[in-house]
Amino acid sequence: MTAKNSLATALKIVRKARGLSQEAFSDVSSRTYMSSLERNLKSPTLNKLTELCEVMEIHPLTLLTLAYAGGNTSKADELLMQVRQELDEVLNSDGE
Image 1 (tube, rainbow, N blue to C red):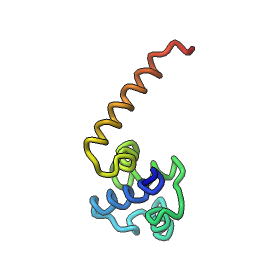
Image 2: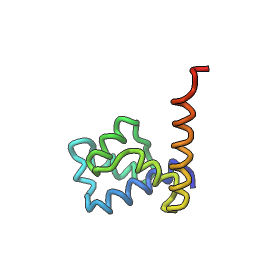
Image 3: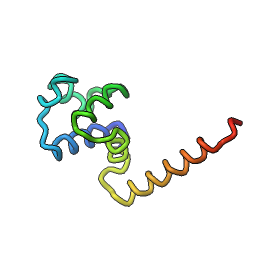
Image 4: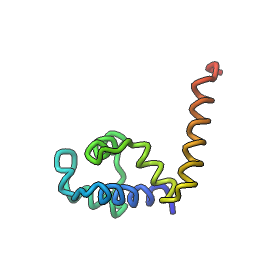
């Protein structure tokens, strides 16, 4: 499963876990747009993803981690360790 397909799945999983209907996103998106995202017909911009996550009260990185981990908690742990290591490398580099 590609990350794009997984994002659609993760979005739907989180929305339902939060007990939200597609209509609950009406301040930031239309129901048809949400449906298109969840059916993997469209891809959100980073700004739109942030707005959607605000409605679901979840950090965008959490949604992306779920998308890449596919519901596998050990894979999520692995991804989070990788992110931490990469952040440390980038932030501690001398700008070389």
